[in-house]
Length: 371
Image (cartoon, rainbow, N blue to C red; front, side, top):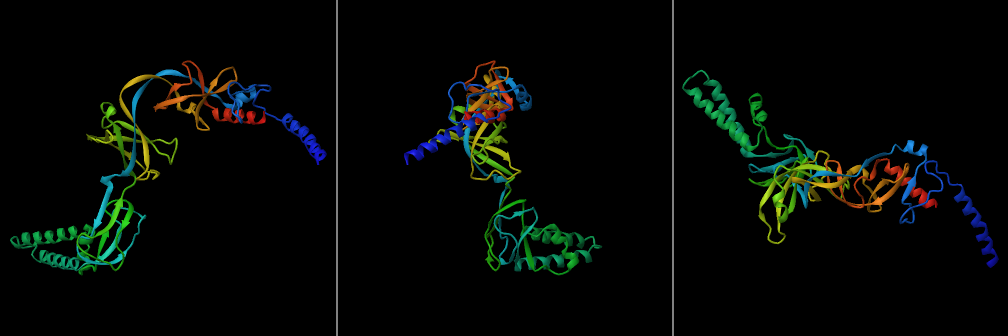
């Protein structure tokens, strides 16, 4: 058994050396040694051949001190825009004959959601038809015409208050008979959050029928630290980020800074209005907000495109030779207008890679694994 094991080891070692010897990396200079602390599967630097440098289309920019607008960070959560949230209730007693939507459906303004048989609706339609007939008969009487017209307008107004549309009322004259069912229409375009009735239900005045929300525009309720109150003003530009879409910015505007400090948390409520045309943002999501503050400050910064993620570490590629690039771990700070502040890891004047870093990281990892 021992002789068999020795034979296996003896046969495997030449094969391993043969695989290592067959490595072909046309972009990386041969014989390049890793610099600094080397992770198990990656080097810290890579040197490209002349051909590789031309293929990679590497672009660089100097790390420099720039004037960055101050920003205030705060945590918060998304919620419905109360100005785009409605409850539809029964405006008169009746029996629900048809329900045309269910929870989750998207509806447009004016769309019929349900139809209700309402005795009051039938009565008001009959009164309107009588008033219309009277107004028509007395149109030539200067004394009676005004009263007849006033009665017709009053009947029309009561039908509109009951939920009939202007088109419904205007069409009564052509029908000459009352419509049997009162339509319940959406008062805004949005999503059905709740559908509280089924066909056959009896509803009384004020019964909840539907709850609608326009989710294309949301609010983010922030918790602004007391120490930051002097720096933030309503109208400031804001950027939101969520765990659901890492690295993606959602831009909005701070529309409210509250007047009361919470005694327990020492924070003030802030409100950001954020467009949501894609529907990616959902009420209830937690967000991290960055709000533009008054004033500017100087900080060492690099373009956002230079910053990369390497197994949870923030890193950049620094040009350390004619075609040599070294991976450098950095500590980023605030972001603004396409630049990110660097708190440590870089010095002013160093050249960082802003385009082609993905290829460099791939070559660096490949070289580390092969070594």
